[in-house]
Image (cartoon, rainbow, N blue to C red; front, top):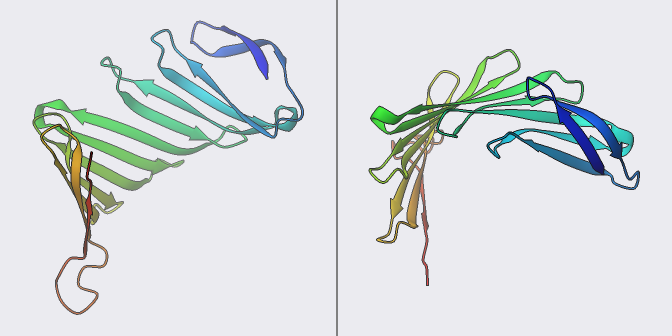
Length: 171
């Protein structure tokens, strides 16, 4: 599909003209703001039928802080919000449904190089579901990830936490 758009004062696109190839089954169109950041995307099928869309917002440092997912009718399905706590080297990702009910929380603690050190996945009651610890080699590449499965903890009769270790080797 070849489309031409005009942006209004709120940076919303208005389609001026388009040619849609009816043989295309599914297509996603990406829109970028003046800074070159992805502002939204729309997925359409045959004859322009909507399959949903997403919008994105960024903070003044260019980091994505908000994603809203819409269904094919334009109704909000999910929201993903990110809060950067730069003073404490933490990142919080909040995943909520269309009613803004918290579904999952991802909390990340960064190391002194700004890389992920500890990642915790929590449920809507802030119970830890999974904890991941990242280790890096001298060149800053991931060398090991330890994944602690907090859901299965104690299910075998003991109090041990099941762990899966992924080791990475580089040439």
